Image (tube, rainbow, N blue to C red; front, side):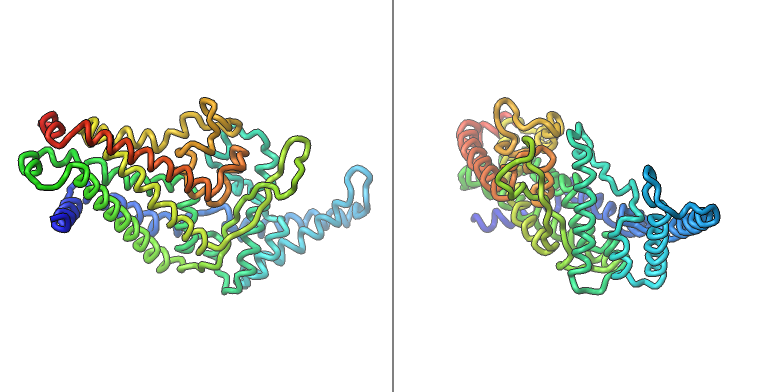
Length: 409
């Protein structure tokens, strides 16, 4: 009976018009981005050879002018501008030549010297720029992370393509998706697909009241089906994105680096502030860590939706409340806020909804709370699930099957 119920619920989810339309919308977004937007997108790591060529010509004219007027010496206030400009000219001209020769290994080595720094490489993310207490540290961190990513390309011992430098390969695109605020879309899928797992049965209340399955067990079956369906859809969408992007920009490599931010390993602080340290993990490890936490978060919201469905009997209200909870951190977020109502933010589950930044350590860096770690995320989220499970069990006893369908009539 249980097996038949699982199959029936799965077929219902597959045939659900709401789910079908949502999946079509997601597929359309993926195809539009992968085919139309990504190939023309200029990232912070894109290189403009024409602009660099103009810069090289300007430096040539400028240094020649210094030679003509005898300004090649050292000044007490100005330092050695001629020597600096000559060095910059050599680096940038060689960088341009390496790019034209598609010698990207040498191109990265020259680029890491920092003579083509683009202000667009500064993160414009709302989390990073919101009330930044130490903007200079943000600037230095961005530079460190950029160099670590480039060094990872050099150390990966793989053929380097320009798409890898621009972070446009399939694996890099998926990784950056999970590292950004767009990762919330993964959890929103779980919310959307499970928002009506109970309320949709109002149309068949007479039939379902006669099913010889306990109310709580029936809710569990619906939750398991929604959980499995969500993960299958997410996996299918990820594979679609990887295939489409791989055709255009290449698959990438699991060996490529993802920069991470770590708390200081030094026992003493510096005038009351502990500076962060930086390291890298492979894209393969990052994706494994993400695959470890996504099911937990998805299950959390599915069970939360089950409680809300029992209480409100309306899928749109459930969808709205769960979405507010998903984005609730934005209501109070601040770079200087470490506690909410006396509770450390590391103990709040919503801190870990932005799971990509938790894995990379950026979440810790943003609010300067060293307790925000991947392992702490598991502890907090599992404790939250236990609380939700207990609440669901109690609510399912209060709002029985007969009471639910009678009030839903």
